[in-house]
Image: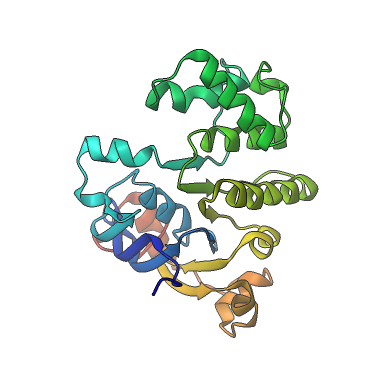
Length: 274
């Protein structure tokens, strides 16, 4: 038993709605300690929605989500505040505050959650900047950084409190292939150096194959596949092969259904996804 990896994220029979539209329908998965789990799927599959619920940003319709053995649906505000200290988030666009220096941005979680003097916080920020290869950039403004540098600074802020869990939403979106590959290397480096568990949502196949220990593929709000990269490559599912080979799906859109979506006249409990 001691050799089995510990489960640190557990999602069981998750159902979510956006208004009357069902987004996720019975999703179950788990993430073990120290692994990088990549969540992927086509546009509208529900992958970003799943990430939001795993980060406890919204409350599900039904089902359970456990983070670090805590059922987030049963936590009060104070307990949730304590759990959030153990979670880091790297947002898609970096989400740095333009009116603050890079160093101030990175220290922001410390301002909110730690009771430390300014010198200690500055030292911690410089240490994390060095980890992401941005040593000496703490006094610059976000507007003075390149796209790749902004993403690195965002990672430094996400790990400033040495979280147990790191959630990343499309970390390499909008970056050229060389910079994106370097960012993949950074994710691997952070996981190993800080002994974190990482969940990444991405549609970049090169990133999936490079960083993933396991992959979850979502399709129309359902789990289509969970397994290793090798198992993913060898999977015979037509939908998975279409996704991996970038082949478009041959789907006919019903004009009446499309009109109902536009006018908000869909029946409650429909199976559309975001």
